[in-house]
Amino acid sequence: EERVRAMAVLAEEVLRPYYPPEKAGFRRYIVREPVGLVMVIAPWNYP
Image 1: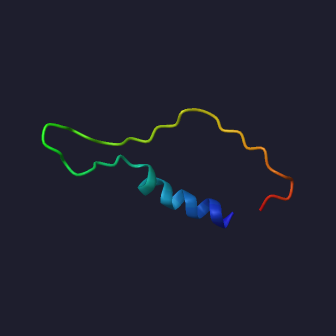
Image 2: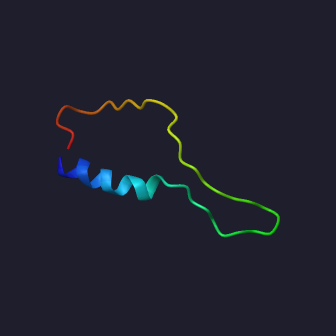
């Protein structure tokens, strides 16, 4: 539960759009958008 709360606090900062330094003639930005579901196969005792 503690880890989930910590990730929820960080999510807003980590997922916001990122604007790299300007370069003449270019407008650059990075936007993180979800692409779908993710599945993980892990051992039953995975930490």
